[in-house]
Image (cartoon, rainbow, N blue to C red):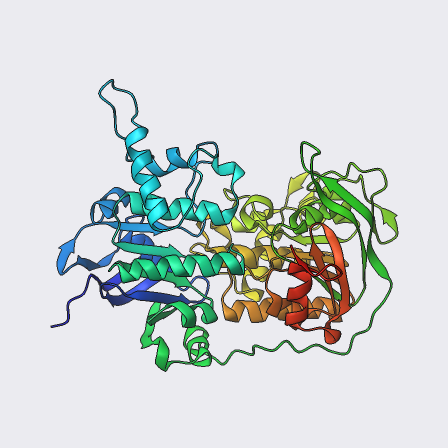
Length: 513
C-alpha cells in the first residue's frame, strides 16, 4: 500500500446552508508539490483552514503519516508540523521581523526575560540556509509584500513545519519575486517537505506542481498529473466550461478627454526622493489606457493622488476630471463628478471589513435619494440593490448580503467592489490590479466588464503588473519607470517584449534600471 504523509478523507464543512466542502478526499506524498485549483469561493481556503485548525470539519478525518489526528487550533497544527502562509499575511505591523517570527513560541531566559538571542541565531541560520535574507530588526510596516511573505515562510520553518500550505502565494508578488519563491518551494520539496499550493493561476501550476486537485463549488472534480494535463483542461475542470482567453473588443469610438493629469510630481514623506516626476497623460471617453511597469515605480502613488487618497502638494501639479480641476477636491466630490475606483488593496481601501456585504455595496452611494429619505437609510431599497448585484456579478458568500465582508473569499471581495464601482453613476473608472486574486473565469468576466465600460463610452484607466492583461485589454499603453512616463504607445503598435524593455531599461542610455 502506498504511504501518504497527509490524508484528508471525506471532509465536509457547512456554513449555515452553504456547503463549503462536500465530501472531499486528498492524499499527498512526502516531497510532493500539490496544487489545489478552483474558482473564487470553491472551498480551497476553507479546506486548508480545516487542516490548519482554523475551522473544524463537520465530517471526515485527517491522517498524518497514517495516524488519525485531531486538529482543534493552529497550535495543534504546529505540533503536527503543519504550517500555513495565508493569502492575507498574519503579521503585526508594529513588531519587528524577529518579534513576529517568535510570537506564540517565545522562550524565557534564566533571568525571566524574553530570550531573543537564541531564536535570533536559529532564524539567521534558517534564513541563510534557504537564502531568504530577511532583516530581523526591521519593522513589518516598512517592508514590501515580497519580504513580508518571506517572514511568513520563516515563521513556518522556525516551527519545524514539514507540511507547508501556501494560500495564493503569488497574488501580490512581482514576476521576479515569484521565480524566487518557486525556487524556495522546490528546495523544500527536495528536502522531503510536503507542499500544498492554493492557487487559480494555471501557468504557475504548470510551472511548479506535480499533481493538482480541482475543486468546484465545494466538490472535488478530480486529481490530475500536471504533465499529462493542458491548461485548457484545467480551466474547464475549474469553471465547468471552456474559457475564452482572448478579449474581444468592438471598434473603438474615442470621445472627449475625461481625465487629464498635468505635471504631477510627488515626493516621499521626508522629501528626499521624487516618487513621481512631472507625470502627464490623458484618458478619453471610449478608451482603455493601461499603465505598465515593475511594481514600485510610482503606480500606487499615482492612483492615490488621482483618487484623492493622497494629497497633491506640488503647486504645478493638476488633476482635471471632466474639465474641472479636482486637484484639491475631496474623495466624495470626485465620486460626484463621475469617478469610480477599484483599489489595489481591496481590504484597506475597498471595503469596510466588519460591515455586511449589502452595506459595502452602497458604501459610497448611500447618500443618494434612492437609498435614504429624511436622513434615514431605506433598508428595503438597500436589500433589493444588494441582491441584484449579488446575482448579476455572482458574488458568493455564506449569508448573502448579510455576510460580513471579512468572511468572504478574496475573489468575492473583489467582485463586490467591481459590482459597486461599475453600477454607480460614473464616466471614469480607475482599476488598479482589477484581477489580482481572481480565477480564470472571473478574470474573463472582469475583462468583459472593463471592455463593456469602454464600449459604453466610459474612460477606463487600468494599472496592472500583468503584461498579458495590459496587452489584451488596452487601447493605449503607458510605461512608467522611476516615476516617469517613458513610453506612450497604441496597443497594436507594441509587443510584450518591447514593453518589458522599456520597463527595465533606459532606452536612450541602454542601461538597466
